[in-house]
Amino acid sequence: MTASSYSTYFKRLAILHRPYKKRLFLAFLGMIVTAATEPLVAYIFKILLDDGFVTKPRFPLWMVPVAVVGAFVARGASTFLTTYMTNWVSSRVLNTLRRQMFNRILNVPIDFHATHSVGRVINSIMFEVQQIIDMISKLFTSIVRCVLTIAGLLAYMLYISWSLTIVALVLMPLMTLVVRTTGKRLKKLNKDALDVNAQLTQVIEETTRAQQVIKIFGGQDYEKRRFEQSAEHIRRYSMRLASTFAATVPVTQIMTACAMSVMIMMALIQSSHNQITPGGFISFFTAMIALLAPLKQLAEVNGPLQRGMAAAEAVFTLIDSPVERSNGRQLTERVHGKIDFIDVSFSYPGQDKPALNGINLNVEPGETIAFVGMSGGGKSTLVNLIPGFYSVTSGRILLDGQSIEDISLLGLRAQIAMVSQHVVLFNDTIAANIAYGDSSPDRARIEAAAKAAYLTDMIAGLPEGLETQIGDNGSRLSGGQRQRLAMARAIYKDAPILILDEATSALDTESERAVQAALDQLMQGRTTFVIAHRLSTIERASRIVVLSGGSIVEIGTHDELLYKQGAYANLYRLQFSKEAINVEM
Image (cartoon, rainbow, N blue to C red; front, side):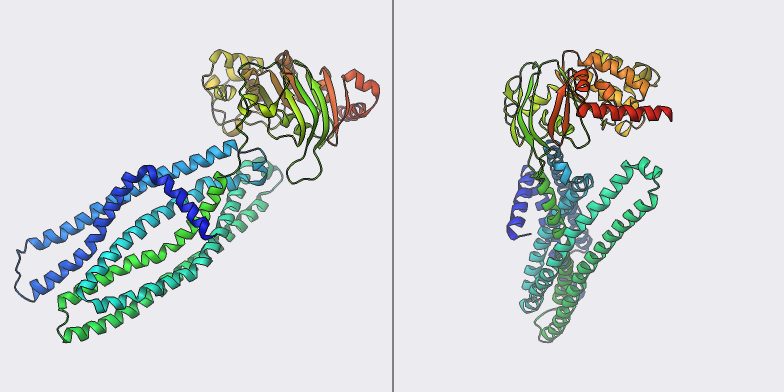
């Protein structure tokens, strides 16, 4: 990480703190008071020794406990003020950073998640951002308070004996050398440790999500090894960090001890020439001992600083990730649903071979277009271009005669409902999942959508009906119930364009018949795109498009394509023979 990167990140963090400058000022005042109490305590010792023990006290004795207790009360109150205000500001900045990261995750393109694992994203939002806050708190409280304390103590020490203070000052450049030497190693170790932490987070996330697969395929030992390897890597990095960091402190203390030895010898010589009083020496020695704590804290700041800057690089890289386009005009009315693919080609980032090549297709409003073909033929890629999940490499896609690139993504997607084979549900109620995305849910529409998706009987058997919590991704529901709930969500949206990507793949035969009837009703008057491997579910489609290698090889109705005895007929015979074998078995 370059010096310019450090500067950039600190500036961005400073901007985040700007709204809270009044509270930071109060924290700074608290630090000043705390720093001022350090030399004040040393001065009290000087007065007590020179004017209290050596000679008869020239002050009322009751002032001693008042001064001592008062100094520590002021110190305690100022420390509390600093700690409270610093944490108040840090918690706000933490939430701001997490909010910025989460908002960016909501707006990044789909292909972002192909290069960023779930574990790494979670690690950045939950843990790396916390390291930034720890760094800020450490820097603000330790550096500022320590610098103020050191300045106050050094000023007092110079007042007592400038020659002894010069010896103490020799310590500072030596400490700087030690800190700089260990700093480079700490920076690299912290960056590597963040990557290892992300790997462990990924293992935990995958293990939690894939419990059924792990159990059925006996993957417990494999997952244990993955976890133990990642945990061991973290342990090793933490030990390297600890050893590098721990070496800084004893070296600093040894240098301090050497300086103290020289100062004690010099003080004895000065005392023999009446250049310093016993109280003055004890007061100086007290201030010097008090100086060790802030010096040690300054030496320890380098660790959190390097961890925080490594985390800041990851966090701000995520915050700065490119987002989906925000241009385009809004659609104020419901579209008719006419979609035209004009010489559309598409290649995934980093791949030379196109996933789609020269697609030309005109779809009239209300038509049902079914895409079939072998896996990898481009079916899902083609339908994912319609809602703008990806932008075409070349060619155009028109919606009611206008390019979808000229329409805002928010307006475009408002016209589309989608049901995928990979059902995504939220840990909320059935009603909330059906009306997902609607800020003002309509209860009557929710009930109608549930009825149309044949969920009424299932809901009636639940203790809380539509208000029943369904668990993480609908874990309390069966596969067929989850699929029908996703369909109810699409029915509720009532969009003019409908995309069904293997929408009945998780259903048994009986459930499929029930849902197919609902889908037939849902598809009426809507432009529908269907991807289905079970060809029996698309026999009534307006047209069937056969894709192979990213290109259209056949278009026609079910009967027309069977009559041609081409690619579709081969697929149909192959599937029919497999189903016949399964029935016989």
